[in-house]
Image (cartoon, rainbow, N blue to C red; front, side, top):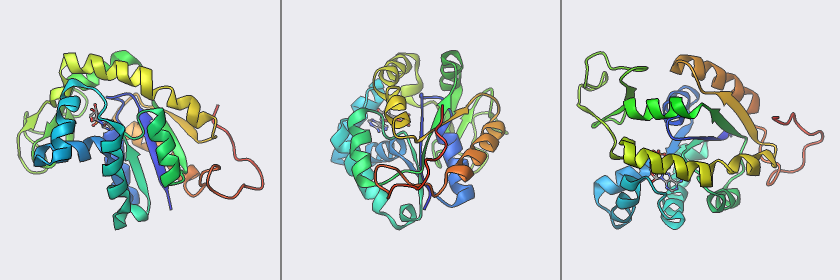
Length: 231
Ligand code: AMP
């Protein structure tokens, strides 16, 4: 079954692409950010603890995120394959993930940081269904309203400039080093995340099709001949 991780900076388009491709390929879209926001909105003890970290742009403690992730991956839809979006975000999470499931590929979204900041500043989210828009690159048909259900669009609190600065720093310090971790395991496939969402989807589709079913060298039986390594 296809098991992918989408890795990249906040604003690189992981969520948008995971939403499109999971629907297309009938994979579960597992976003730890969405799971945490839903827990915070529901006011569960875990959600209340996570909320302050999210608003400030800091990582939520690993134990909380892992508890949510394990539950989500146990659901039947995820057993047929998944795209992990926003997890892992640091080395302990990557190591925990390796004990839970093998992976087919880790797709690395490459984008210059100036573009990231613009994308985060322009991002708007539907209050009802969570569909993501961008005021310049993916505007809704009617300003401020969701195309799907007409509900209002809002800016996430952590897309405001103060939190964005923290998130980009956390990313550079803790998440970006995972590139080397996964390169060492032969799992990284880099894609150019610039351009329209349609351009990026087309690039990704090709990468995912080529990588599906390869499994993870760490947990699968050794392959007879080593597959092509990315870079
Ligand atoms: P995202 O929607 O992926 O940008 O995540 C939004 C926020 O949720 C992050 O800035 C963190 O505060 C929190 N979060 C999401 N995924 C994780 C994770 N894997 N580990 C820790 N915190 C996370």
